[in-house]
Image (cartoon, rainbow over all chains, first blue to last red; front, side, top):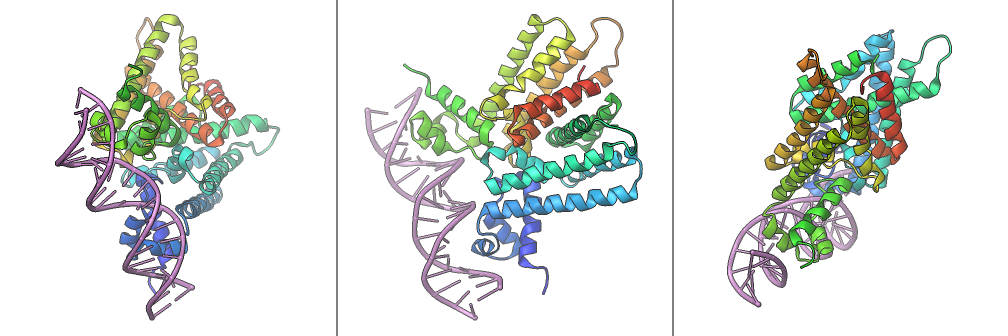
Length: 187
Length: 187
DNA sequence: ACCTGAACACCGTTCAAGT
DNA sequence: ACCTGAACACCGTTCAAGT
């Protein structure tokens, strides 16, 4: 058996959402690319909300796995944060796509509840990881301040991606992130 | 004559986009609210792209007018920047909406060209104003660095709005912006 | 000048029917 | 277990027809 139909649907849909958004995602288009009829997709994902939620959930799982690997690869905060900002650079490089959950956050008002829940979990996963990276290894620390800083970094990175995307230029992302760094937001 | 039909379409559509995005915008829904048939909207705006472009253009014009008024009202950089961040707080307060061009930027990949052009102009208008505010009144200055800083502030604010929107809490926006400020990004 | 009804090809969804 | 065709109410768009 070649690739699973369900898997094929998910990977096709994920790229489509990153490129054009959740609302622009079409069952009939996915079906055409996967090589089935659109009604078949409903067998695997009863509603579009089910598909969206599954996509976001896996997106978060992939992110978490990647970020956790980074913790074992790099030991210092600087390298870890550099790898983090590099990660959000990737989709821009690949045909000017965006973070899937960033796009979905913008479409939040039109998102089914089950998708919203998963988008929120993506934010949580980012904040959790950033808190770990920002927390001092020894000595006391202001937990509330660190959590704020983590959320601010995540928001700033998502914003950088959003604006760079409109510009259609990775260099814009790089310049904005560099400015965050020299300004002292990311450090 | 009561309010113009065209005006009524635009104000209704603007709120709808800020709440649920450009892609979720429906001619038939607007028509119902305005009290005409959906075909009538095509008389004023031949395509959805025409409507989207008109919305973004006016949005930018309104922003520019507001920001220019701020320059006469406040003389110091601190007050001006505080008013700026307050401006992007407003849509969140009003039923958790977002900056219209911020939403559109996320949907960029599925946007007609004429809308993209106007969304880009919104970014330009923000950067232009921020450059003016950040530029020192006397003495030399690094123009390139100031432009970078302006773009970074705009991106960070859009990101803060995006994330706070997902949280459905203006307090999150406030906390993120406060962190930008203490980190030294906005000053 | 402004609006409408009807038709078109799209969309997600449902469901009875196939293997 | 997995897929399909046909129908449904939606969508933007077009256009001939109304005032």
